Length: 416
Image (cartoon, rainbow, N blue to C red; front, side, top):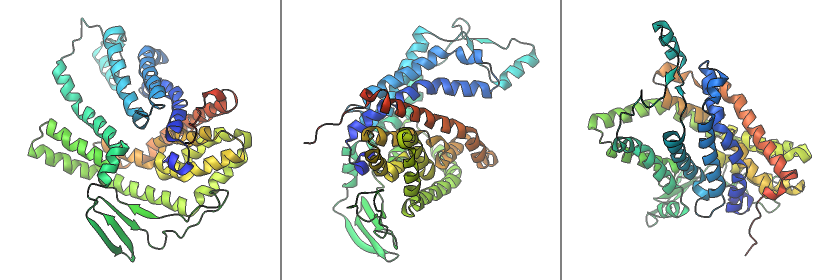
């Protein structure tokens, strides 16, 4: 999406992101462990006790992220490949190289041991603890996650998307819906939004003078959408796990109940994102950032962050601000590849405060309906400053790459 709206080379933008995010990826595992331990009223000593494991997890992810992001073969699956590589490296490291001397105990576990008059430290020595599952059982337990990775990777392949979008190309239709054209094929129907399609015109400096009116077409890519891949993974996982008819029914009913509120929130947030776009609010905010001058590389990250916060999607943020970022870079004589890619990497940090993401997490993690319904606000308030800090880290990296280490910016290929 970022490449299409900015007109810059896709692999080069991916490589640029791969030169920024590994520094954050290196930090994230330790960051998460520290937050978790302190939330459970642990000590900094307990945080640093597992630093070799967090370094292995973050370092292996960062190295593969740096490598995969700049390759034609893997750049569209960078985080999937990096995640798998990190899991394997960390598992092998903990199994054969190093493991912590004690197991961290939750606050409730420490309190229970204290009441029983027992020591609060639990050893991880292999002589006192034995893994109770076979290799086959372990692999079988990991199968759903493996299936999900494969499906996400396949649905992310442009060739597969193109195949699905043209699968029923021979079945066409042409009608109207609410007085607006509703046409296309069975695999890719499209509806022109009434009273909006091609009626909004953006002008310079937000877009080029030759820009066409804003299209407002709802393309229903129901086969090639990422969610379809996740749905297929869920079906395949159920078959592999040999769910009974009762278990299938229970899974579908519970999922439906849990997702009822998140679906409404997602629809509202998406609506807000489109309202922001077609009302011109995003352009006004973007133009306000251009006043930062030489500090703009830092604030370019926050523009992407703002886009994800408003729309709930890094893709949508790139669609909103990708072109504007390039135009601003040209006006301020900054490297276009750096500034445009920073829109996406900064946007990553806005994902943790996106209402859609939080609602889906609540649906997945909370069993109690009342607790689930009231968790959104507290979680948002808890992670907001982490999100701000994360975007600031990306902004600092962008500033350093713009003025101190310009050699870290990849050079796009010459036009053919």
